[in-house]
View 1 (cartoon, one colour):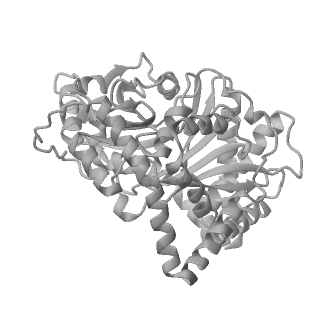
View 2 (cartoon, rainbow, N blue to C red):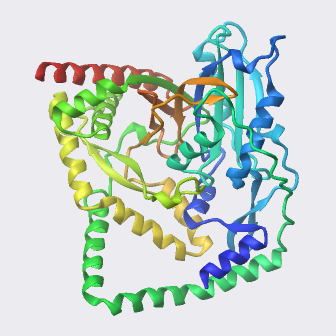
Length: 478
């Protein structure tokens, strides 16, 4: 029945947001925009014609030709009375509203590029239009490069599908691929009354879905018991010991505005540490971030030897069949970071042991199960849950590490040299760290509120120093 309703929705020209996607709409406030994005630096020459003019029309035509591969980039969110919002074709869609051009004043340095990104990232996307923007920035690095600032609402994409989107909008070769016109015309907006009726029908099928689940489970009782036991352990792992994070200045009210800093680390150094000490790249990243945050806390007089902060680490639960699909398919792990430990090797070993234990107990599966319950929640309860999430005490910051392509990407024939991810802040998370690996480099995007400038400078320096320290330890072990 659910599949039938989904097919009816598609035929009617709309599809309904998932509960998790809708939650990101409820989380959004003026001071907490809920979009993810990136700041990239690209080659200059291919973007300009022989007269030196930026080829904006060509860029827009290129991007427009790719939208047939990501249909929601031409849809807007429409609220539904008593039900979840739906994606509907934007009958006023204009590529010029989403692909824009601006220029930096001389000298066009990186700080100016980041300040522009800070202003753009602090602005909420217009829900009357498709929820994304691409800003091309001319005049970067004294005119040697072009910048690219990307924003997509979190209800549209998570980190993994964000990488998929990038590989659709960008090319793996210098020669750009322009797709034939797909002849897209917007489907008529659905009648509001029909949307309410469809929602009521969906809700009526929920008890049947639950009953079918129970019936299938009782057909194979031993398997059901094993699955239930494993899931119970996973949920317990997520909840056990993670109810309250330490109270720190990182978790005060988010101030207006945004601050962004960037750090770039050779992936070879991190892999050397991984191979020497038998851990994962993510373990190294978490240990490095913990060391850097310790420097920030020390500056605030909050660092003490026994201090263990807690990091939300989003985990993709997207399988191979869900690649290139928009929306959110994420869970999370809460990872304790022993920031009070001064010894870098001890810190890394502690993180390695902790993540191995969490994976063994399948904490991310437990979190996904809890998030999955939201599919059965009423929309008003989702709004309440979002308000509770803004007041959460589970974690002190978010650390998200997304693997990207290790080969160059191009836009209109221009190579992308660097790309730094940007993730949103919640109302009581004033500092987040996002990492994207690309072309042999780990690109750290450090995001804070409008008053965290000094903290981000300390954090950036701390990351560089922590990587160097672990690299030296690894070299001595060889």
